[in-house]
Length: 334
Image: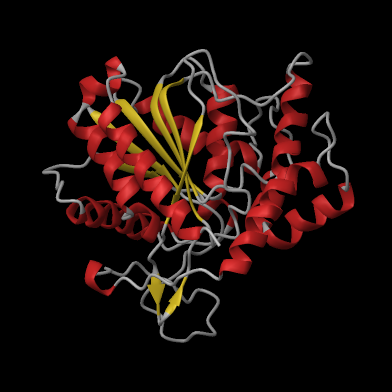
């Protein structure tokens, strides 16, 4: 069975599919080279949906920064020797960790309904324009000739998985793409198995998102009491985030999503996103995430140790990831 990585991008307008797919793949190759695990061949496909919302893609050739299609954050190779790791402010790290622990308690009722509905809608509208458009339509709709924006976005991912259902699939979902992936995997294609889900810079832990997902699933299944890992994820769900990533404000999904029947649940890993452009770091950028040591190690094992994934004998990978996660947490301690 062939190994295949399917990626799905996140919020905002993007360069063309050809360019973006190439940059994702370059970032993956860059990361594998960093850990001395180059691959002769990487099977990769990007699920591209920006064109459903935006009429024209961003253009890397434009020089005018005032042009609405100007691409201000292209892929850039980052030599390891020039990585600029900035030590976090101890006080801010302490306050941030405290705030994260209180998010659900402050914003959610015990039944997962939002305590501040107007605030929830305002936050989504103000900071997640694409998500607001996505959520205008219900989760499940009657099939019609004219599909909604939400159906069209979901259809791109469904098609990619259906076409490759005979492959061993790792799905890497960035930002809003993780919400699309959760919807699709949880409701629409349960008969297709996914080896590994990797959510990156994901807002799936934000109270307003947790509440929205739970409410929609409750409409489908009245007996639901807790959000769970989609049943078609067979072996792993890794949730990757940089502590400075504001989209992934709640970095821990393990306390929001329970195990599925295969005993898979989110495994939260903190990483350092080293994407820099003109001296400014963007801890949410996908290119920095894809070349991080942690994701590179996960991808390397996915390709080189298929038997380990099938049998569950992946202790070396798990041990390494846990050690890296602990190292980063110690780095963040005030």
